[in-house]
Image (cartoon, rainbow, N blue to C red; front, side):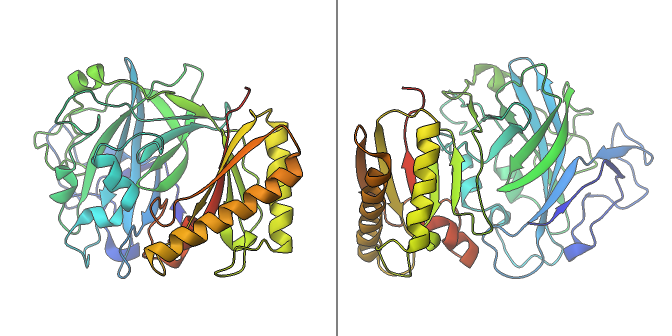
Length: 355
């Protein structure tokens, strides 16, 4: 991922890469409630391809992280390339975003998160209780109406941040924008046209009734315990889970641990012991979408059992370890790219901390 960092840019600014306009008006024009001298806050940017496999990238821009009563409002936009090869702009945002807008904000945090790096805490989106509102956020139709060369501003409501948190890393559209300043109140003025809200024409109207009836997830935030990784990203640890890269553990199409794989499991076992985890652990194997579903299911089961056996040896008695395989059914990235497939080939170890 390539990240562009800046503070403020004029409403006539545009990106050179892929000729993606960051605003929906020509330079020198003005929106209702603004003037040509006004500026749109650009607190950080990242390029994204999502599941699009060719052509210029889109641009994700963070415009604000704002405290309101009972929530934190994230303002962000998607800038669609002028020469976009796709008809559906959601393709630039990837599968996690599609799942988020379908109302699946559960254990995977949806597609937005705010990370307090200093406090090592990750804050998750609110969950709506209204039947026809899949998320406390802008409607997905706002993105579907964006034309090439435009950028549509969206909002997402997340759990309230503690008063002492002044900066966060923003995760949105499967990208991370670091060191964003937390500010107070909603962005103004509100745009006269709401679907879509084009950058520079004002800001989307946050549905505070929807936000007020939405509830935090359980838990509303989780501890970012730590990340231990080498260039191969062999081991990644977050609260209650250790994720191991299958490409480090096994040779292609094999369920026999390599020497490096044995050492990687030993490292994971040491982390589990240090975390004072409970005695019940689950080892889950995952696969990419190459080969048949039956083959991937069987391979994921064999790999989970191999890791479970090595983990039992490392941890000793007193632990109950269950091995299961999920095949290709639970991807965490797109299987349309080699990088996405590599993320999906993994073995995770889940446990309960402090019990």
